Image (cartoon, rainbow over all chains, first blue to last red; front, top):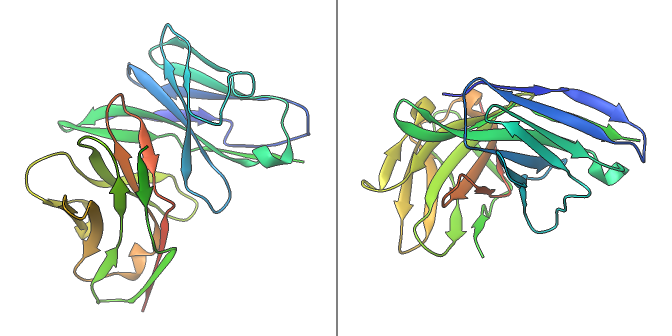
Length: 116
Length: 112
């Protein structure tokens, strides 16, 4: 299984600023994923973070707004740039890992972002 | 395009009664199907998944789900609901490389 540490757990930010969210995994994983969960809504995949290459973004998400770093196999960051109130959401890091022989998706505890 | 539908925003059931949370998917290829649960103020937790084999999959906390290929459904079920089962349930689809696509979620309310 994988244990994921995500920080900060929450933050309140001013419009126009940027916030970087960190995700640390206790084991090496090939890919890490970033999701957003807007209030009252489901999870939406933002991007896939590959070690050693640029992240792959889903439709509706762009690198300028959500730059991602993946410097090694246990760590990734997601930056929410030039924030607006519409970016208020929970941001989740996740990895796929083996747990008792089964592949499962593990999630970090999430970062609750409020933009004023 | 892949999509996952959870047609019910909310399901209400009395404690001790059977429960069903519905999920259908629209896909190409052979997806992996998952159920996750999100308890209040807590992160997502894995319940069960279907890859291949027996269409009835048993998971955590007494939950099970039945894969129906002809109806492209993967409904979550439990024979006897508990008040502690009250939570938000997400159906999800994955193909490869670990990308997951989630349904909109269904809030389960189990009343004593």
